[in-house]
Length: 271
Image (tube, rainbow, N blue to C red):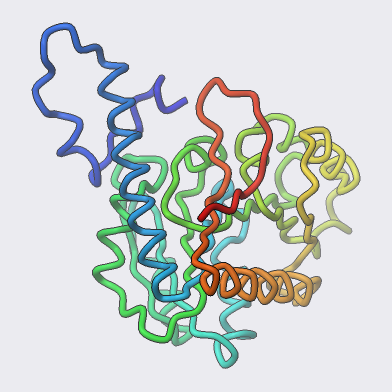
């Protein structure tokens, strides 16, 4: 998708995109170099997180699925147990960062203008605006979009994809790249199921499993508090795993499926 629409040129990497192109160099090779620069920056970001023992989680979904509401509930439940911080991504406004700060947690808003995803350069610039002292878990709330965010490594350790019950239950089948990249899938707004007759949770899980995904599927309602204990336990488990990796000098890189690749895998651990 990004190679088609050109949206992998963002404010964070624009200085790399418009270098003079030598004779015989194609646009495709320029885009490949942009992605290579992104991956280099992502590795730098991840090394920074590992040096501080921080677990970084990338939240992805379509707009309006409840990412910010999930973060608000998580902050209320865990801020006395862990140090938390948030990087927000939207095309415009500080609205989501303001909601997070109102919960007493540091947040930095990235406004992308027209770019439909965050990239590693944007996250790197945001890190210079956040005090990460005492932070255990850093959440990156990506721009609402079920396509491009899954193709960019930000330096995170884990990907979480939200699917709300107000969307179609066949979304995993229609947007497989996003769901294949997930280390956990949160089925959000389940308190609305009694009034929705066109969303079948069993069909949504079948569509996910048909991608050969075995990741946890966590039904939750952040606003009603339903199913949140399983989400909190998953976060605790992932933070413990991150601390164990850091103690061994290892890291975790989430699965990134490039355009055109029909693969399935999950987070890999490397030295």
